[in-house]
Image (cartoon, rainbow, N blue to C red; front, side, top):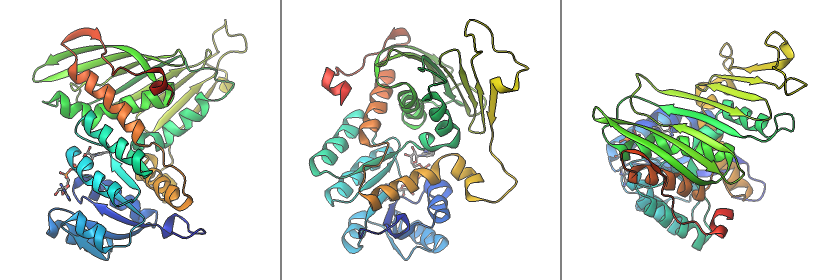
Length: 348
Ligand SMILES: NC(=O)c1ccc[n+]([C@@H]2O[C@H](COP(=O)([O-])OP(=O)(O)OC[C@H]3O[C@@H](n4cnc5c(N)ncnc54)[C@H](O)[C@@H]3O)[C@@H](O)[C@H]2O)c1
């Protein structure tokens, strides 16, 4: 892309035309008027159907053929976790900026291979932790970093859902979102305990984490609930942020004298954010509120500006470390076995 290019000039290729690609990423790319020049799926018929439906000029059944034939500025990869690594490595080898859906690989070792390949070649890699870009969490982060809120001391985060037979599948598809958010709000994880219990072919899991800044997180990632559950509370200096799903944020300010309770009938002690849904503006649409449109825009912006996209592959590796530690834990309560970080690795 030339020096004065904007995100709409970035020529993108997409690999993977399955359910999430069709339901979330392709509609988000269309809504942000991205320039998608080619789409690829191993199922060539599916790729050409999606090309027709989304007005994409070219379709392929082999990503190497797409990389060789098209003049691309970046590639978006969405498929099974093992495919993220395999295709991602080929995209990096082609020297193209990579957006890889979460989880970045099927294993921690795979995520580390992507991180090493990206570091060796200097290729930017972004991981699709779209919750960081969800409106409710962007607002929560802004408040949690304000002087009025004070230092975030404790995060209570629940991202749970219905039964999932495989602990690995649950951690890779769902747990990684919670682990990334905990790090996003509270910083690097330095120690933790995990409570894990198999229940009726599924499992419940809860973590207590200590973060480098001194804060703690309680994170529950169970697969034993009737529907998707998502909520967070962040405690600051006698102030509290409370979110429910992606559609409600309450900010409860401290009383002027922090030894006193803030009065519930004092309107200045509470603030509420909730999305508007009456108008058809892009910013009011669910793919925007959930973070998909802003994350993909951030990827295109990063390519156009030459800045590193956030969250990068190292954030993906960190979330995978926590996921693997939960998978390796025995039933019951145990210390979380995190990889042996040297000090410089923690600070990196
Ligand atoms: N961030 C989110 O909110 C979110 C939500 C759902 C799914 N996801 C992620 O999206 C990914 C895809 O999930 P899905 O439900 O769409 O799966 P899916 O099975 O519906 O689609 C995967 C597609 O990848 C294609 N594919 C596999 N290997 C390929 C290859 N080598 N080259 C080209 N195409 C290949 C398949 O043919 C299929 O069409 C998962 O890894 C999941 O973690 C993310």
